[in-house]
Every structure is written in C-alpha cells, then in structure tokens.
Amino acid sequence: MISKLQKPLGSGFGQKTEPNEILENINLSNKTIIITGGYSGIGLETTKSLKSCGARVIVPAKRVEVAIERLKGIIPKEDIIKMDLEDLDSVQQFTDSFKEENIPLDILINNAGIMACPETRTPNGWESQFAINQIGHFLLTKELMDSMKKAKESRLVSLSSSAHSLSGILWDDIHFNTKPYDKWVAYGQSKTASALLAIEFDRLMKDYGGRGFAVHPGGIITPLQRHLGDEEMVALGWKKEDGSLSDMAASFFKSPSQGAGTTLWCATSSMLEGLGGVFCENCDIAERKVNVDESMRRFFGVADWAIDSEEATRLWSESENLLSQDH
Image (cartoon, rainbow, N blue to C red; front, top):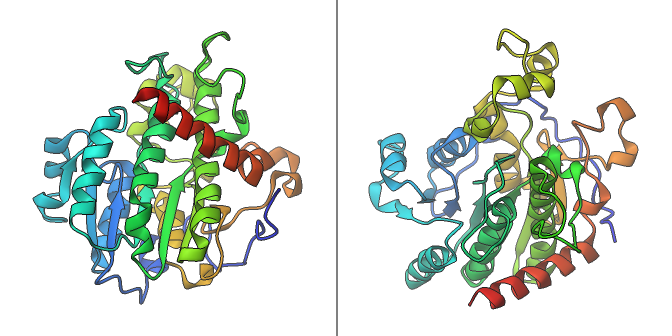
C-alpha cells in the first residue's frame, strides 16, 4: 500500500535551498541527535547546521581520529563515539552505551553509507552494501526506538538515493549468492531498503510520537564516489572528458551544504508535524515516479517499491531474521 501523503506540500523551499534558510528561527536546544557519517560530505554539513541550532549532536564514527579532527570546534570529543556499521557488535555496543544515559533521543539520522563498491562481503557472507547501508542501520534504529519513545516527538531520517529506482528488494537473492554481482543493482537495492526502513519505522512508532522520513539528498560530489573513476563518471553523464562537471551535473548537482537541506527539513520542519512514512527530495515530499515527466524519472520522484508499506513490513521481518542468524 502506498501512503496518500506521498505528494508534495509546496514547502516553499527547493533543490538548492541552503541550511540557514531551512533552519531560520529553529531552536534545537535540549534536543539530542545521533547522525551516522556526521563527519564527512553532507553528513558534516548536517552536523554543523544542527549544532548551530543548539542541539547536542552525537556522531558514531568508524574512523574516530578522522572524525575528531574534522569536528574540532564543532562538537565535543566525548560525543564522537566508535562504531562500525559493518560490525554489528560495534553497533550494539554503541546503542547500549547510549541507552545507559537514559535520555530521550529526539532525532536519528541514518546518513552514512557506501556506494557502488567492488564486490565485498562481511565475515558472515552478506553483501557489503546491503549489510552496511541497511542491516547496520536497521540494528541501530531498532535498538534506539525505546530511547526515541522517551521523546515526546521524535524523527528518523533515513538517507536513500535516486538510485533506489535501479532495484527493488531482490527477495530471492538479496546477497547475490546465485546471480552475478552488479554494484549498481546492489546499491539501488540497499537504497530502496533505506527508504523502506523509514516507512516501517513510521508505522511502528507513530503512536509513540515517532515519525519516519526517507530522503534523497540530490546529486552531490562527495567522498561517497570514492569507488568511481573519472571514466565511469563520464559514462554516467556526471563529468566531461576533462574531469569538469557535465552540463547536466552543473544544473542538477548540489553543493554539500545544499545536499544537507532535505535531511534538515525532514528533521526539523513544523510543516511535517503529524506526517510521516514518506519519501522526500528537494526539501519537500517527493512525487511518485508515475507522476514525473519520463525524461526526469531517472533523477526525481520515488518508485512505488520504495514506499510500499507491505514491502517495508516484509523487509523489517527479513532484517530481524538476518540478525537472528548472525547471533
């Protein structure tokens, strides 16, 4: 089932709205926020913006020393805590330590991820993009739900991508055990999963004041592209032969700060009070792809398989099954 809420609100913001416009008059003092990957690319811009509004921002980090250096003067060192999404014991240790504080969690932003990497697998044989982008974040989210119930109102922001349109969930072979590995299909599947995580979270949490939002941040050149060479980015239409941005990319791509915009809007906007379980882009709720001009469907809109509540419930159950097999 597709939510009837999946249609633009007319937020007044747009593709390249800057954080200071979105956060004007927003006060986040007394709010606690956790953001994965909050020390690189759009995650760093998100952290800076939320901190500027008075929030306590906690950044779980795989590379703690790098995070401390990049976040120097932005958040205190004690709020940068070791966590590796690929290592579920590490995720559990992080959530256990947070729960020991016995405080409400107001906002969880699942921002970290990997993209289009060569085939790699976790020690238990899971395909790494699904394992990191979905299962690691699923465990993090599930373990923090009680802390989010303690907040009168809480929000999950789960970062997806326009690449979700490349693949729904491959129910018969999620980890490419029988089919040949395709890095883009694997990435697309993992980003569909990121969207479905927000949809099911919203269903489970709305009676407790928790709402879930999936986000396509837009095209941005960040460290996420580290596995792509210039030649591949030329083939994708992102760059010219000389390495500069293509005309298309120059028109559609955002700066890292603009790329943080939709996350910040979903995390803080009063326009979204009473709403949730939707996919957002360009600081508004996205159109379903069936309503988007065909020439633009590759870049804008959301495919129904990424917002289908039955798919979302099934993925939640499958993720729980995978976790039970791991322990």
